[in-house]
Length: 126
Image 1 (cartoon, rainbow, N blue to C red):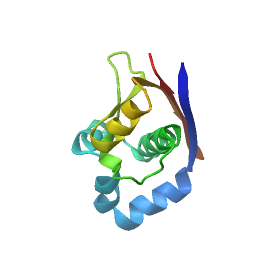
Image 2: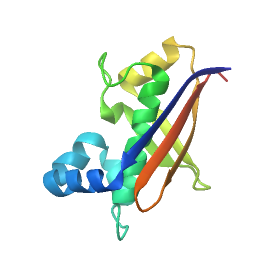
Image 3: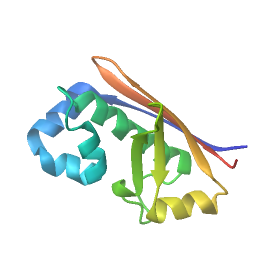
Image 4: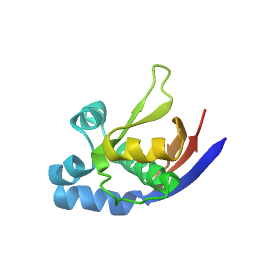
């Protein structure tokens, strides 16, 4: 059963400006070292970072909490499985909230083009 749905979109222009202004402090605040490492070798990592940020926001919306109640950006870890499909793993307070809602997993999708990134997260109990 679906317990929550979240969607988010991010302007690549605004995200690129934030990365340019705050540089490593910005990405390190939002992403774990493993997430940063996974995108570090790309010629232009900004679209992928923006898509993963949109995914974190979509997860927060699906949980119904936003970024409060002790949930931190690093509690939502984005990545890809062996086939390249996006996935998300929750830790800490985010995982506690998911489990309290009866959630067991997220089904996610991300995409980006030259202007924006978008993500959808569906919280399921099976």
